[in-house]
Amino acid sequence: MTRFTLPHCRNCNPFMSFFTISHCNNHITHSITHRKYYSSTISIEKKIRVSDSIKCLDDAVNVFHQMVRNQPPCYNFTKLLKTIIDMKHYSSVISLFKEMLKLGIPIGEFVLSIVIDSYCCMHYADFGYSILPIYVKKGFPFDAVTFNTLLKGLFAENKVKDVVNLFKKLVRDDICEPNKVTYLIVMNGLGKRGYTKRCLDLLRVMEKGSTKPDTSVYNIVINALCKNTMLNAAINLFDEMKQKGVPPSVITYSSLIDGMCKFDQWENVRSLLREMVNFNVYPDVVTFNIVIDGLCKEGKVEDAEEVMRHMIEKWVEPNVITYNVIMDGHCSRGQVDKARRIFCSMIDKSIEPDIVSYNILIKGYCKKKEPEEAMKLFLEISHDGLKPNILTYNTIMQGLLEVGRTNCAQKMYVEMQSAGHLPDLCTYRTLLDGYFKNGLVERAMTLFHKLELKRECTDIELYSIVINGLCKNGKLDKAHTIFEKLSVIGLHPDVITYGIVIKGFCREGLFDEAKNMLRKMEDNGYLLDNATYNIIVQGFLRSNKISEMKSFLKEMDGKRFSFDATTVKLLIGVAEDPYLMNMIPEFQRKNKK
Image (tube, rainbow, N blue to C red):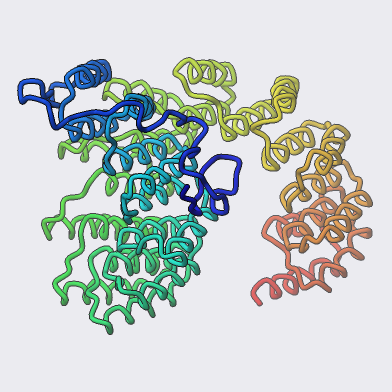
């Protein structure tokens, strides 16, 4: 009876259990040898051909039963299962595999690999482990392909710890040697989830092994470093790969350019673009889109359009992402008409807009308080063969609420659910904020209480919206009650939440309570910031409590905080006290420091 250390089931530690082959899994209990399957005696006439004529699952199942009756070569079963998994009927692969075990049909290692893949595609990677004992039973050697499938499955379930443990086990116990794909899967999965140091450590491990890192491996690590704002480390690794004779690709350069754009290092971007051309590595549409996006985020939309013209001159065709980025840049500056012209020019060039294109324009019109134009675009979406997504509905609802069209927003909310979209956190935040801003406190609180009962779709941001809405609608007591119970329900107020409550106290002239909340905030480990102090000063000024404010200003001065623009405006408007007027330039100097 063979035993080996491999993971096997859910709710167990999949890396520490020992398994007996004859009891490999509770849900695969059939003996592998119920009857013998003599494929060698089959005449050519009885062979069932697995062809492209299988169009649906029923066709595949019928072929399977024909094959069982006519006993074709075993590789036909492999082809059939591969066809079914390509059709994404993963559970059917598992069912037919169990039937094969029950009937004693010989199982090859390719079939086992397909079954493991099916489990992983169903997000049951732990069940995939249960197939591994069959490899040992039949004497099939483990290969990297099998474990690569399991590693991808674990990442799909976000089981990072299990991935790391499995990889270590493969190497430590010499179960099988990881190949380049194994390293790529693990490093890519770690990098995308922010485990940048582990990703870099794995590169160093790879350098010491027989499988050396190539350009694709370096690309993953450099991209992870750039995404994690570790630009200097990425540049050092880039220089290192060149010194080792590993040629950078357009992906390498694009990752670095992306990192440099985020740090506004435009001169370095230009140098890198020149370097890549000198090495006969030419920017592609992704590279240009990165540069265009960086410029638009800086507000340099005209420069971005110039880059687009340049890319066309270099025979690199802009895609829908290019146009979307420039449209978003214009909308961010309130230039919706220019964004609309870009939208139309994209269509003129036979580039189909996607739902992102529409969402950008709809948001632009809503920001300009032009919901009618936004609704016209919304109606165009279906005409272009697209479907609104949850972001489309949330944006439209926000735009309607901003101009007081609460009933229209409510209708859109109902329509969204009829279209099969479940409300998300953003939906509820949008509705609550809009109801409060339009004075519909009762409607807002009804929705809030429903969410509380469900205990879902609530976070500190949503509670902050409710507290703020109550404060602004003269319901400070209710707001304070909700604030006080946050810790009871497992939520912790952030700086914004504290600021809302402090502002609420100041609005009602309760300055002692406001200062007490400031102390409470400090006691709970929050660093007091400039904005919070300015909220209290503005409250004193609006209530004309000048003498009470002077002692507070000394505290503010001691912490070296400064007046913001709103505070200065209020000071100039209400203060005749020379002491206060003299403090304006003093506090502004601190801001410059």
